[in-house]
Image (cartoon, rainbow, N blue to C red):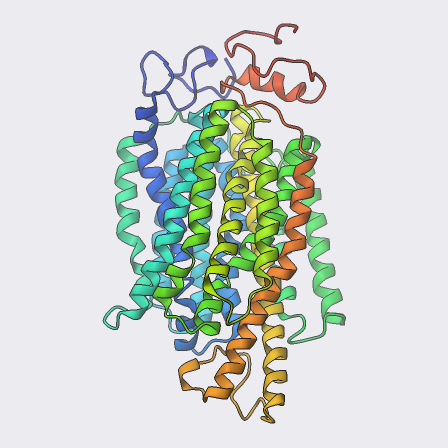
Length: 555
């Protein structure tokens, strides 16, 4: 029996998550779905918090007298805290009760949401979004970890599809609900933060009743020093990217100081990780080809995904003059594509055990969707925009969960938390970088297009009220309004153009991933054996009997 096997799981071969069965038998589909009910609801709440604000953000920023930079930071702050805390949640999941951690993450999320709802300026809103992001990061990371603890890799694709479906429903319902709340006078945008609280309370109750996992008891050694240097390095990088080109030139002493400081802090983080007894991100994972490639691919996918799609609400509301509610309705084609591809691919992967084709296909769809969306303008026919978004959604659905699945298939069960959170960490890191960098580019491009448009009308930008603030289109004269709508349409299209080659890098990385058929067991000895021989025994059968002790039989 492995040293980390808890009491109550017999013989070291019982699937993790089946501790509630007295005979150690594998969980049935019904038992797994009952156990996942509260978890999926918690994840739904986390995703809802991210998407419900998207269509309300233009109204929120205008109401709080914010700027385009503030718009970017309201999104970036939550992504940044998710990024920094994701590996920490993963490490805690390897040391503490996963069920308790999910509940703690829910409580943190509720507190952050309630405080964000009472914000009186963009500064406090950004600060409370950081707290909200800590809870959201825990829910997103832990959901992957809990599923990996209960379900063997071969069956995991099926349930990863349910996660994708939950993600899709929250992504569809969030903007729609946020738009309706914002458009309802007696509610207002603040209820976008309050509405998730009752869902979180229900999730807490369901988790207490349905989620039963073995508790791994080990001596706790949390790498707080590594977490500090990681947070400092990433935060400094985000601040530099956001301010460069606006407050100072890209080539300036400020750039050298901040970018150089970020690199130095990052190197210190790597040094700390080599010395830590329980490193936040085990650097030895990067010696595994699959984990290294999927992690870096997730970084580029995160840049492309978050960095481009988060600004779609500005395109529909400011370039196409749609209400927050209609802005949510218009993004349904992208979410429908994500829902279909994540669900269908998960079912097929469960039946076949093969996943690389979906990763490659998803990468192609992601690059194609971004490339097509880079051609849109403020007056492009909606059916074209809808088609392009659907292609993008299909690509995202096939890549997001399967990148995590590929990495989980390479590690021992007690390392699932760290491996899962590593891929999630790189994706959210890429998202934070993408939103920050592309948000700064969007601000610059909009200013450029507005100045050119107003110059053609012989109007000074200052006299027309153009600037870094989010404009109130209804208050603008018709000629100036057309200039502003065109500027936002072209500016958002530019973001997709810049995101496409970034996604292409992710696709290239995926092409070099070595496909290993998914295992049908969470057995520690079997998984360790597979990890050691993953690329040196190509004639090995796709899977061997999971309960066979020792090395696999010769083929």
